[in-house]
Amino acid sequence: MEENATPRARLTGTSSLMRENTSATWNRIRSFVVDQHCIPWRISSRIRPWIETWLAHKSPSAYRLVRFGRLKDILKPITHGPRHHFFGYYEKPPWNASGSLILAHESTFNDRPPRAEDPVSVGVVRLHDGGQFEPVAQSHAWNWQQGSLLQWHPTQSEDTILYNDRRNGRFVSVVRRLDGSDERAYERPIYAIHPEGRYALSLNFSRLHEHRPGYGYPGIPDPAHSDFSPVEDGIFLLDMDSGHSRLLISLSQLASRNPLASMAGVPHWINHIQPSPGGQRFAFFHIWRTEKDRWSVRLYASNYDATDLHCVLDTGAISHYDWFDDHSLLVWAKHGPMGERFLLCDIRTGEKTVVGEGVLKEDGHCSFSPDGKWILNDTYPDRWDFQTLMLYKPDGNVRIDLARLYAPRSRWSGEIRCDLHPRWSRDGRFVCIDSVRSGERQMYIADVSAMVCQ
Image (tube, rainbow, N blue to C red; front, side, top):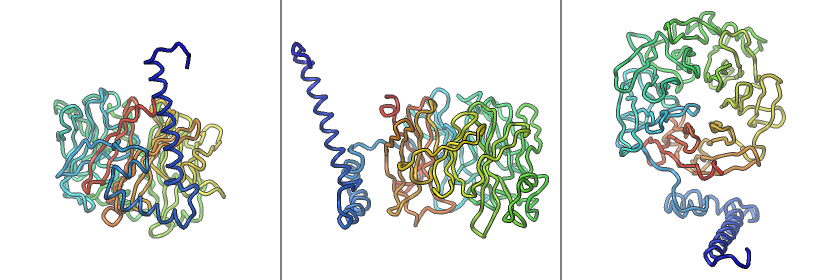
């Protein structure tokens, strides 16, 4: 600091230096106590269970101080009981265009899979008006993982929603203005919609429910139940203007592409369709059963007329993914002798680059920030039944853990589990999650602008 600096400047500089020194000291202590780099195993094996069980439950503020270096809870609840609220999957923003509303589902129960007769309310939470849930409609086509695939219409994202429903003995999709002034039902349920809103992609939710409960919908049996790879089932392209749909890629077609011995005589199905950001392509999983509770997966990408259907990964073990741009996507998958990793896959070149080596060590629901500089991610419940919410910056291999949330597997597992499914706001300043940390299924937001806008 300069000798002729004002007293205020000298004081400010001194305070800043003290904060930096305090922060550095705390980080060293945290590394010693929590990360356990320097503590003998016999001691660390006793400290960590105490921190994650007794301290986390008895003194959450002290736990946050030890675990994250802060007393304040970064998460703010935006929904409240006694009813349960959740949004669903992780790849869509629940915020509307202005950021004033968040989409949500509301249920009267939280402890079992939905039955065909169980409705769920779809509606909005007004963030600047006390956080009250306002129901807009009801759906009879939903699950705990993805809800009714409720989302904002991409070209009318201030006040128009899409969701799936069951009407007149069939699954349909509905486009509706919040005020009810305009509503249109389509002949097929929607899994994903093109960024420009003209086309949507659909699949057989009855078949998905049979083979992957928690992602499909109960209430309508699959007409092709006995056919392992139907010619007339697969991915459908729905024209949002005309309302007509056509089969784009069949299960029979996928089962016959570079077939493996494990594909013969077993059911095939499709899941996790996601358009690329610019709408040039979409990705999806082709899945076939290998044992009673096991399956194998191929990750495909295609253009919207299926003339460029491309197998991105064929390693068998493939999980969550997100598009980085129209040509590359991040996916958790088996990677040869290295085991499972996050891989950035370039569709054009076939190149696969490991992301987060030594830092992102397990599967999670990954998504890129709107500017592409950060990855939002989570984990499944660990041995202490805690899920970790985190940010990761590929530039510098930096990971910031935001929170640890209790989700006891004794109460929520399998089809009724509550994954965090973290989602970005449209401006990348906030994240939203679903959680059962309170014993109820509710929604929370966190302001991460100070971390990601540096």
